[in-house]
Image 1 (cartoon, rainbow, N blue to C red):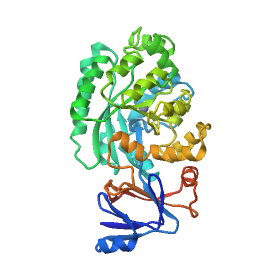
Image 2 (cartoon, protein in one colour):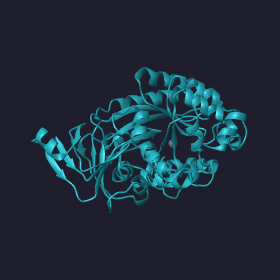
Image 3 (cartoon, protein in one colour):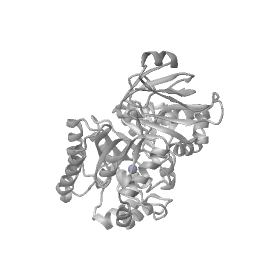
Image 4 (cartoon, rainbow, N blue to C red):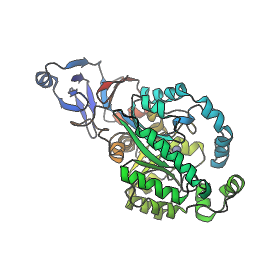
Length: 404
Ligand SMILES: [Zn+2]
């Protein structure tokens, strides 16, 4: 048992002053230090500096570790030129991103306060690094393949990767399934993978309506993707319309990533089927996909979470930086309430969406917590300043163990 004495504790809806927190793997009690000390006389006591703040560890629901070697190799500005640059540089990027490169990306997340992340794995090359990470990991084995003739081989490879991730037995590691997108996965494959996810209760993720090119291709079989598919795969039409894709997910709530180009009807369906939207503002800007309308999501009552995406479409995996970009991108939102929503989106709301016992500083929740030192006594705009100032993370606890 450990008792930490921070000056401040940021919970879901209040700032506690001069309270202590007792925990082992889970949070046991939040109370006056003297009361906790009597209750747990053998606990190790950790005294913190002036103006120290303890808050929930952050949850980054969408990252691609396998592409962490990219810094300046990929072409930004518009989706198809970016995708073509990924295809051109893919082998180089993947072969230069060894375990050390992926560990660097994982450490970048740890040092910026991320205690849980969702790794979208296209080849399983990141399994070892994710297994060895100190964080909680949702390991999303991604299925891709639009051609029926390749379906069995691709599905076999996918199953092998799912099995390999299931063999990782450690606290806080969860095998999961990702479907790449409506334009890149044959409906037969989607059905088979969703069945596995359902039977084995595995978390689900997908990219959906990211770019205008995707929208034009999936809805009308035209636009920039028409040339792309003809050239690379001799395909004249999209394997799924957006509506067909969503109907496959009717009973499978998922993390639907990007969703910048979805129609009102598609958003209604996302709401009705219990999906959560993952918003990656930096990635959307760099790939020329526009800014999602959060007002529309909120009026349709669809939960959304902020995430970084991978280093193939971002310059950092720091969620505080990502929230800062979101803060400026969505300039119509009221500043302080929006800062609070952003912090909730990477803590309690993310935990709710993933059904994980984390994301809250609350008795019974896993002790996934970060500690930082504020420069000054916090005021009523604390959440805004947390995002703007990016205070150094002093220590990190994951499942009650000191990870930093
Ligand atoms: Zn992605």
